[in-house]
Length: 471
Ligand SMILES: [Zn+2]
Image (cartoon, rainbow, N blue to C red; front, side):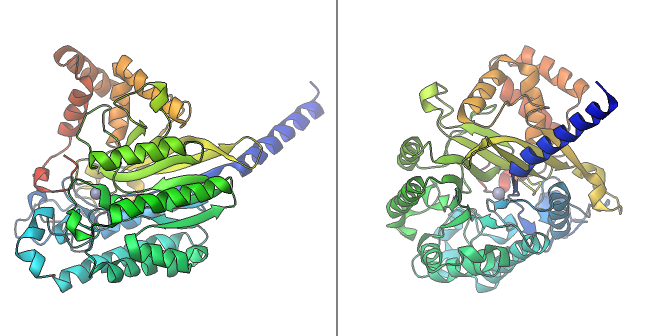
């Protein structure tokens, strides 16, 4: 080829790739920050680094494993998110904004705390929520930001506000996350105001062909007392279905956003379901019926990254109708490294969006920051790309289903996936050792063994005390 021809070809390739890049759609997701405004870098993790007398000698200014996030850690995550993708097409925030140390455990509602609604504490909680919303909005003035609430964003963990308190609580959230954020102006509608006040959910149109439905999964957990607001669980499903039907009739794709995943957490560790069985069955029915409309579900809550395709307990094709991704937490309380993710959707030339193709995860090397005064941004790294580093072909239900099946066959890949789950950069030596030990000792339960060994490498304090359902 002549020099001129070569230049031409390079030029053509550049144009083509810029065209396809322009079609990509990027979604940044940040979850479970659990910001603690009273974080004390010298208080030890067995007091959750907050309001304690017991002081560690080495200060941990940017956070400590076993504790919730100091504000500076959360702010640093937002800055890195901006560096990774300065102007995402969409930002998703799946809930749990507030530190565990401010909210009453779910059992406490039956005791004295129930009668004494602690107004000061409640205000502290709501101030934190507002602060989190504003901190994200400030850095991304051009991006729509869709939120959902976690089980820890109210005075009582896992409880929805009762009928006397919900209008005030949900309207505050409506203003913090929708009306007060200029890039969310389009979503500040009367309809959203009313649905928020009723059950804390709403709908935001992102493009002509894409809407996000944010719904409040706190109504469906096994921990919520039905008496709090008995009519909602059923009517919320009717609302959800009517929104799905509307999107379907407009040929729109839907992203579902909720805090607590409905599925069973099986790979690589099996855990009980967080949802009441009856509601879980209803959710499966909806997802199956609208599987062409729902592009994907995003949730938080587990604090470890997790990918699922519909009902993982039954991996057969007929159950592979929904991709669900659980975000890793910013809060390092469950011995994970803090992190966030950026998802890329690609389309095939026509207007309709395809399933998301891949994602990139970023992680904060927290243990390296203990005792340091250096700029926290130095400790953020790109952890992996799902396609290149994990071999996940795409994020369609079938792609995820095949990937999960491959984890069971391939211990090495499972080890790599597990390291990424908790935000640990992959290391060949460590992985080899862990795969060998677990393969020999627990050949039938290798996933649980791998996760156990990795979390043991990180300092672990009395985290079992925390009632987050993430046991
Ligand atoms: Zn959480």
